[in-house]
Length: 372
Ligand SMILES: C[S@@+](CC[C@H](N)C(=O)[O-])C[C@H]1O[C@@H](n2cnc3c(N)ncnc32)[C@H](O)[C@@H]1O
Image: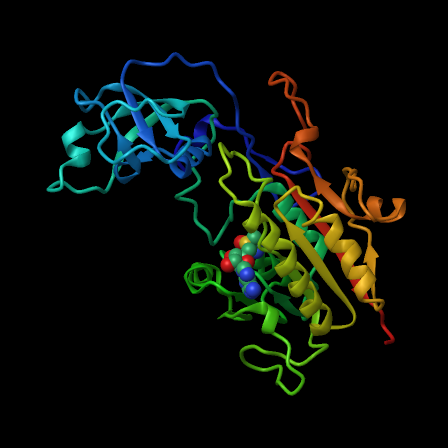
C-alpha cells in the first residue's frame, strides 16, 4: 500500500472487524507556478490518497517537464478542454506533486496514456493509497457502510438478499460474517456495476443483474435467479440508489432537481418489494449515503404507514437519531441512525471521533411481524 508507513491504523473500539485509517488535513501548501488540471473525480481520488494517472490530466502548461514541481487543481465546472495550457475557470487546489512526464508525453497521440503522470507529494489531505490492497484480506469502506452491515446482523445459515449490491462492499462484508454458510443473493440493475462484484464472489453468493423492484413474483421458485416468491428471505439489505449528497470529499454536485426528486420514488418501490420478499420475523435494513429527509426519515414514515405488518427497530449504535423536522415520533427518531458530518466541528485542530467524522449516511432497521 503506497505511503502505508506514514499513516496510523488502529482497531475500532467496538467493531472488531474494522481497522480505522484516519486521514490528515487540510494542510497549508504553497502553490507553484505550474498548474495541472484534473477532473473532479480525479481530484476527489487525490484527496483519498491517489496519485494522478496520465489519462486523468486535462490541462498542463507548455513548459511542463518531467521532475517539475506542479500544483494540481480540480476543474469544478467540467469546462476545461483536453490539452488546455492555462485554465482560468473555477478550480480548486488539491495538492502539489512531481510531474513524471512532460506535456508532450501526456497529450501526444503517439505516446501511451497509461502510468502515473503526477506523483502527489503534498496533497491537501493525506491518506494512504488503498488501490493495491489485497481484497481477500481487507475491503476499504467508509465507517457507516461497515456499521450498516452490523445493523443487518446476518446470521450463519440464513438466506440474505442484497437488493442494490454493486460494487459489492457490503455484500462482501455480509459474506465474511456468514463464514461461507447460508445463501447470499446479490442483485444490481447495472450490469457494468454487477460485474465489479465478481471479485468478492464466495461459494454461497449468487450475483444477478436485475431490477430489484421486480424481484417478487407469486409463482416463482426460490432456487436460481430472480424473481423470487414472497416471504423468501431472512434478511434484506436495501442500500438504495440515492442523491449521494453525504459523500465526502465532494467539490460540487451537479444533480438536477428532477434527478433529486426521482430517488424517493424508486426507494419506496424497493422497500415495498423488500417487505413482500421478507419472511415473517425477518429484518430489512434500509440505507442511503445522503442527507435529505425525503430519502431518509420520510421513507421510514411512508413505509410504516403503508405496511402495518412492519415495525421499526432500534439501530444498536451510538450517535444521534433523526434531528430533522419529520413525521417520525420522538421514539422513532431515536431508533433511526443518521451520520451527519455537518454537525461536527469545523475546527481542524479538534480531533473528532472516527464514529462522527464520517460521510453523511442514514440507516433504518425494520422487522416484519411473526404472525401475519
Ligand atoms: C448505493 S449503490 C450500492 C452500493 C453497494 N451496496 C455497496 O455497498 O457496494 C446503489 C446501487 O443501486 C443500483 N440500483 C439502482 N436502481 C436499482 C434497481 N431498481 N434494482 C437494483 N439495483 C438498482 C445501482 O446500480 C447502484 O449500484
